[in-house]
Length: 327
Ligand code: SF4
Image 1: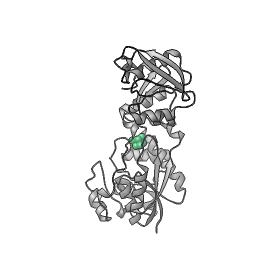
Image 2 (image 1 turned 90 degrees about the horizontal axis):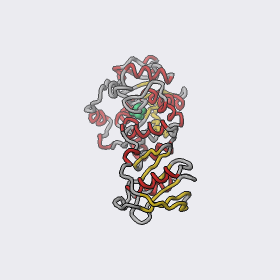
Image 3 (image 1 turned 30 degrees about the vertical axis):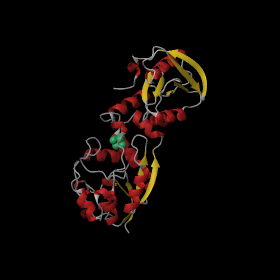
Image 4 (image 1 turned 120 degrees about the horizontal axis):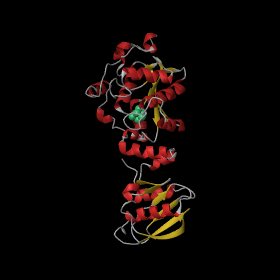
């Protein structure tokens, strides 16, 4: 056994192949899977994949410091709100913390696969930020990259590394077969990075602009329609499941609204003490998305801590698009 290899492990095919290669080289592989609401994978399927290829898996949630990085990435955002350079460096730093001096550090990155973070100069920059210059092994593209300290010290045999490049995955089936697997053995554990999606990024930006970026609010961005009414945010459920989640997620002192006499969404106002005008606007938006939308006047109930605190009569809001948080 060559010792331990700590591998950034998303559960995707590149990380699977890297793990298999490292195992073949004689390393005991520890997959490090970072969880983050911005790039969530199906954790159960990641665990299953790790088990299938016989590696240990450590699941590490990113911390609040990741949110700071999204707000103010020292090396800038990509096309949307994705801070790829700093995000990759953040991941490597986590790997370094866990690995300490007890093994080599590796990723499943492929040279030229992504424009911002997987070029040679970006690899170098990211390693430097993470304090890991020359200490990150990328087994899939290793032959095309400058030798790492592991190769220089004879811990890794450069001849056993691959020379994959670019986005193509046409080599993968053959490579997996050489390890006794098929591509179908590894269903993608779904979930790309939401920070790269324009419609999601605009909602994150809205939270940032209102100093409301926290993990709870990020999770709420994944459900409902989002409206900004002054300093207050209104989230309107789009179906029964979302309505239930919104009711559940309502914090003490936050208001929820609904139309009592018709099938209606739940609206959650995620701010403390909204003024009467804001509550009225929220009520008319909720009325607009209820089955009472064609009525001239609609009763809307307002709840706090599960108790009815106000009954309003409003006209459904047909100009409420302007409040919607969107591109
Ligand atoms: S796409 Fe998202 S998860 Fe991937 S490096 Fe960029 S910010 Fe990080």
